[in-house]
Amino acid sequence: MNKTTLPLLTAIATAAFVFAGSAHAQDKATLDLLVRKGVITAAEADQLVNETKSKDVSKKVEAKGPDTKRITIGGLVQTQYQFLSVDGKTTNASGVSSDNEPANTNRFELRRAQIDFDAKIGSDWNAFVSFIAEDGASARDYLDKAGITYSTDFGKLTAGLRKVNFAVEEYTSSSKLFAIERSIATNYFAGGVKPGTLGSRLGFASRHVGVYWDGALPGADGLEYGLSVTSGYQNSVSSATAVNNQVNVWAYAQYTLKIDDTTNIQVGFNFGWQPGDDTYTVSSEPDSEVIGYNPFIKATMGGASLQGEFLGAWVKHGAADGSDASPYGVNATAAYRFGDIEPVVRYSYLQGDGRGFSNKDVWRSSPSTGKLYDEAWTIFAGVNYYLMKDTVKISAGYEHARFSGAPAANNGSASRANGDGVRVQLQAIF
Image (cartoon, rainbow, N blue to C red; front, side, top):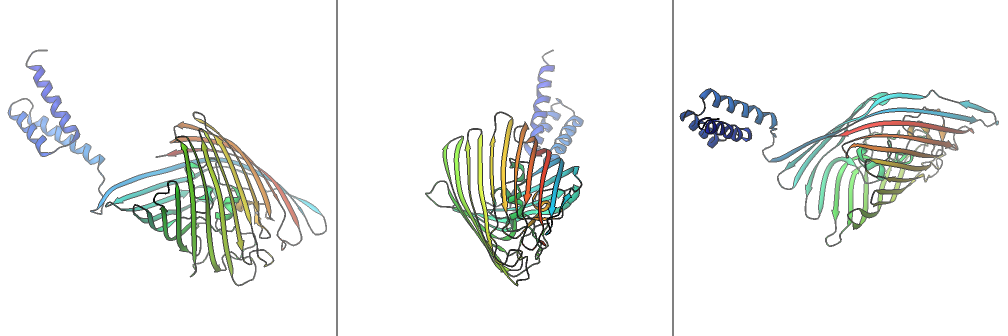
């Protein structure tokens, strides 16, 4: 390589490097100088400019609002295979038993395809929107959350649609669940309600439109609380609840004790009050009222994670015979992650206290027996394998379910059923 070639290649490489990052005016002047000195041709300079502009445009996203500082786009995709079978028996008032074996559930489905948008507006404001689409037997597209948030030194004020702090497993992100699906207790308290329908889920938790405050007390490290006033009905895609003029009141408090970088314990209490309408009544009584309570504990110790919660409610005229009802449920989950492997075990119990529920409504994708039960429990055992840290994981699990009892208004019959289910799910976060 001669003495003339080395400076020439150095100059060309320097110009290319400068324009690979940006095409500012001073960089254009540098190229013009190189052209005048005969180091590069005008055609080569134009080519560098055009290539740089193309790269800039491909990476540029312009916000419509002049005060928008940043837009973050993310999402979640979950695909799932599931096989569930149910073996039921029904005994009528005369003591005669009959088999009840509905067709098995055996299918693939797109469990969730979710897209999230979050915009930073100025220094204190945020706006967020999230959409979810589902395929399979319950194919649907719906708004997961949307709202505007104002942040202060003491907490955040949010106006819009989001999940309330009730039923820990429900408001935990779907991408961060230990088990593949939410439990029977969670689905009963948070699943969509069908007003006036015998055996409907309670539909108390999950998504509501309202005003939310999430705060922290100055000087009290680890102590958080929240207060909110929302619509008096659940904004569930599976709920047939009509709009009403009542409002719900929600509150929570939780304390997190951080022992070290890998060990912490959190205890908390969630509360909700539905002052009265016919949303939760399954009898002919004209009005209803619900008071819900949800104490919980979560602990992380190295690779071990433990989570337990009690879900309870008092429902005025909530039982099938028109009396008050106090349904409740329990969730207990344990997981241990070592490397990329995470075994999981979960127990869930549900007591309807005279309200009744169908196996299909509380155990997702379960073949329906067409009967109502008043007590159920499930045991789930599975494993999560993290293929790419927390970004991509595959999960597999087996769950056994038992359903028994019946509300008083179930025509004097007694039903019971055993269920077995296998699910495999692939998840990617982006």
